[in-house]
Length: 341
Image (cartoon, rainbow, N blue to C red):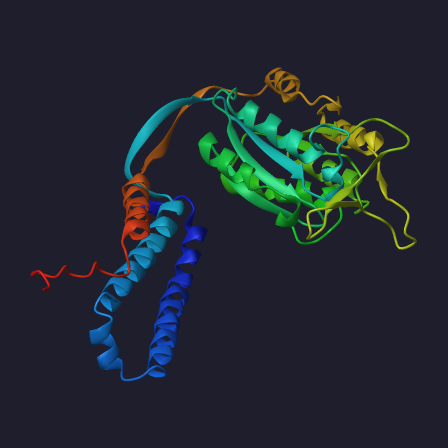
């Protein structure tokens, strides 16, 4: 047994909260009845009331919640080895998740376009291991190198600007975090696809690229955003759902601009390529460039494939919720057996 999304198990901590909520409601109901008179007498007069039924309905909801939480954690059973041909290339997608990636000069936004293209490219990888690093003011390894593209895609779907709490754009951290991932996986052919608007706030991005080159890492930089001197505003959603644009301390709207020069220097330092995405992002062109690189050798790899078993839990959870919705709190009163005269 393994869990594909173990963090979802934290939802189980709400089970005591649900139980306490039902107990609180029952206590309030009992106190309300005490104000009306003797509880035993009221129970006889209101024979259709069903405290046992309420407890049963509460149990249904509680068990259903537990089953749903465990199913979202995606329990997996039935492992098997799968042999595939590996190219020997390891590709890490380093994705900028800073607020500037919310700019909409690429529809629907820079970040959304980057995620969609990465997801599409995962379908076209041929024996490459793929990993995912997200960065803003800091960088984190979101997914280690793997040939399980489905797992990469699931983690990619969760990539949002609030994933990295530190604001800013630190390309230096993105490169060094990717380098660590290669070291852990003992990579041979190491490639970083860096997707960003290039507005580096660290000032050390080129230095990091030069260090990466010593480790034989190639960086393909993808400039995301319209190449316009005026730049694009950064939309921010307010709690009430309305949109406002990010402003500086003087109240002026901040415009984010593509920094092609920095991205070109990063790629040049590692023998990679810089590609301008413009308003139409196409990562297939990047992958074509990667496949032209020498040094990749095909070999057989084995990896463990697990089967999802969340369906075994999700179906009974839904059945319990449906049953609870149609199960009445009160029982029907018995009909009189005789005719009144």
